[in-house]
Amino acid sequence: MYSWSGDTSDWYGSDKYDFDPAHKADREREAARAGAAGPRTYEDKKNPLEALVDPKRAIECKSKTPIVVAVDVTGSMARWPFEIFDRLPLLYMTLHQYRPDLEICFAAIGDARYDRYPLQVTGFAKGYDLEQQLKALYGEGGGGDGPEGYGLFAWYMLNRVSIPNAAEPPFLIVYGDAPMHETVHGKEIEKVCGVASQDQNAIELWRALAKKYNTWFLRRPTGSAGDEVDQQWFEALGPQQVARVHDEQRAIDYALGIVARSWGRFEDFKKNMAARHAKEKVDELAKRIVEEVKPKVLHCPNCMASLPPTAFGRWVCEYCKATLDL
Image 1 (cartoon, one colour):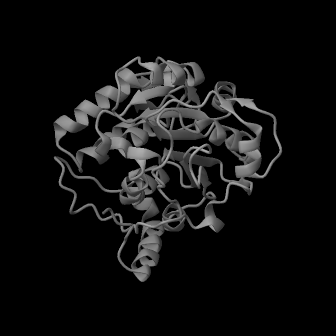
Image 2 (cartoon, rainbow, N blue to C red):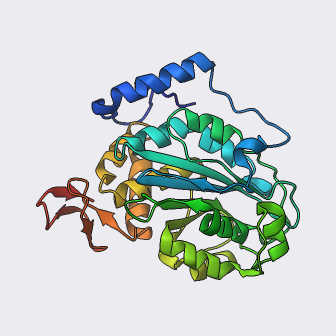
Image 3 (cartoon, rainbow, N blue to C red):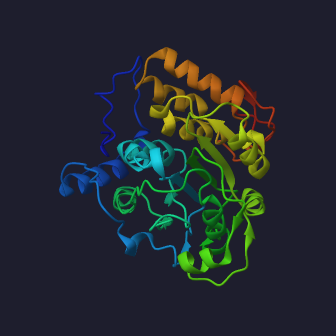
């Protein structure tokens, strides 16, 4: 498992990497907290810590850089919270050095028509506190034989999450492998979220959410390209926001790469990954992100100005004249 210390000496890739020394004190503080708590573990459990993930409560993030990571935990996806937990320090420390005010919310998506815990949502947190939030989630592994409850999660995000200080549309990364129920029944919303509601169209909910968040559906490698699952998510988010995760072990790297490229830090991300993997793996994933994944918005990390979607490779920001590697 990755640690909170920021020590990369045991990374076994083809290159070396050091986290930004400007944030060394932050990493040391989180490492001390983690060390006091003992070895990093992710225990199997029979239910979530409901006080931390109750979907009947509303949540707010006052950070300028909130990110939401949601995981379908039905069926074969049930172990994915562990995969994210394993790489949590990597995820946070990499993005934190780009945007120090970063806070992350996690969600577990099930199916209100079959599951005991169809929706779990943590509060926003940072640093070592994220471990306790993520460990509160329960991978129920239920769901039905087809569509899952993604629409209920979209309703929650639109109606129960407040991000008043977000400087730009925040990233919302969803890991899944299934289509969604086309209708979110009002009785499901009331039962799970405690709010009376009419029936809702799930596609319309996701379209509304995509206007507020930089939303991505990262699909587990099942089915075939362009199949029913892809088509529904294309309709909900647009094909440019749906990507197939060809290697499940690189699921976090896909998200890191998408965010890093949008924030103008893609070259640093590639160095980070090269310290953990063989060069061919790095080149393959970087190529997929550049060719298959087109971030809606790119930003200059020097002056934060928006860059055009066509920005690629070595690019000069027209505002501050900084030379960027995209």
